[in-house]
Image (cartoon, rainbow, N blue to C red; front, side):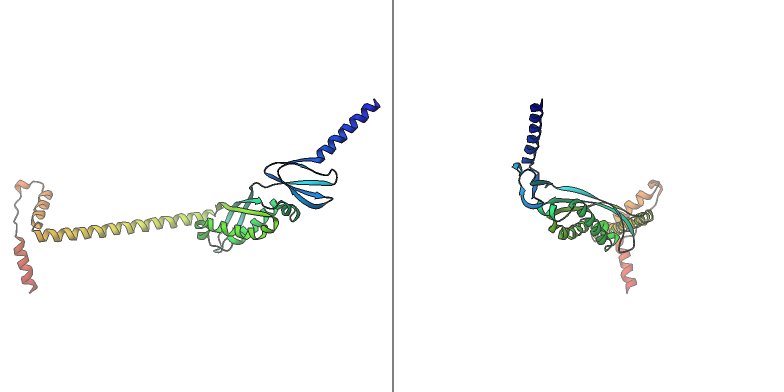
Length: 250
């Protein structure tokens, strides 16, 4: 029994040694090796070996990661309070820097992006915020990238998700949009009437030149008369009217 206990102890101890000796790194990971607390090298994917009790490894995920920026209450440059939330996409580029230079790079990136979002939104007006969302997102990303480059992390994108504005401002914007639609409709109607008047003027000139204006007048009278058989029409030649015009003009 005593020998059996010693054997079990040796097996357990050997298993612990083997577990500390062999380390498997997945394809989407990198392993930062510390020897007696000092950085030594970075492990690549596959089976790797360590010195038990002397070395330890910190695994770092190098896939693109997302982190939500909770809704922020920000006042725009034209004094409109808005609620904005966004999402940050980032990827670890240098695992050793991400481990050694920053304690929690995910939390740090989220906090820095939150601060940058508040600074940028506070410097733009509401109309610009609503119409140039991508431009503002790119500006926030640029600010965050300048800081996170030293952390070994690459910010791939920052996207503004929702923009919440006050209810009274929504009503004002709805009235403004309605007025704009009415203005456009009025312009379109005016342009249509102008084009129609130009066509009518050209048609009248062509009828006057060809002598068809009298025929058009007779057709108009016929279409507006309830009983053409009992209607007497006195037609005056156009030439007589033209003669009167010339005489009066003199």
